[in-house]
Amino acid sequence: MKNICDWNNCFEIGEYKAPIEKDNSKTYRLLCLSHVKEFNKNWNYFKGMDDEQVFDFLKSDMTWHKPTQSFSSSDNFFKVLWNNTLKDEFDKTKLRGEYNHMNQFKFDGNDIKAFSILGVSVGLKWEQIQDKFKTLVKKFHPDINLGNKEYEEKLKLITLAYTQLKNTYREKIDT
Image (cartoon, rainbow, N blue to C red; front, side, top):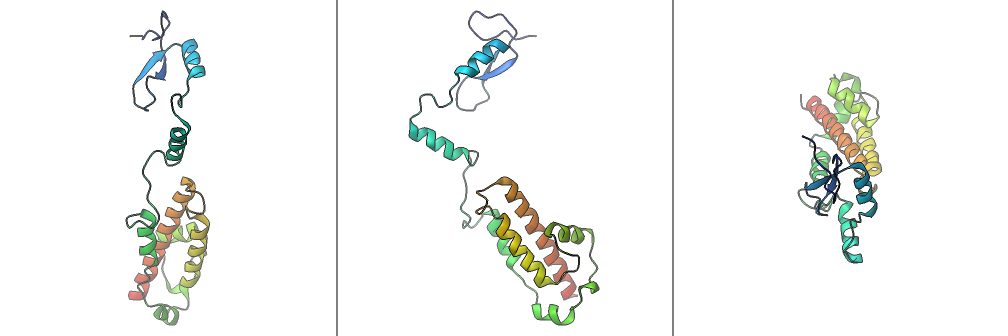
């Protein structure tokens, strides 16, 4: 069944959606091509809003109209991941003394991928991995990159790679 254009006195086929309200709801009307062009030409989302309302909307739009958390909030993903990452629970002196040569480690595919994500050589000394991680965090941190989602995803990947290697190195030390 074909829908008729929802424009006054038009009997063309309505194929194009046009919103009924500004509330971003799923309600819409179907218009023909010529009337949807007319509708779009005259559509002003901000009609009826004062400057402060427009400013508030645009500010909220920067975070996709979702509530945000400060980096310091206790349940912030990055803070939890960061705190867990920085907990170095193995004895560094044991690492330096007993494992001066990283070739004694056997790395699996996940470890190799983690080295690659961090951009370091396989078997690099733990202190050098830590230094590289800190450099990458400074480069890709959301606060430095204005909350850019691309950098946020990259930082998550880097942190997960670092955690993978930290667990691998810890296992080798504890055995």
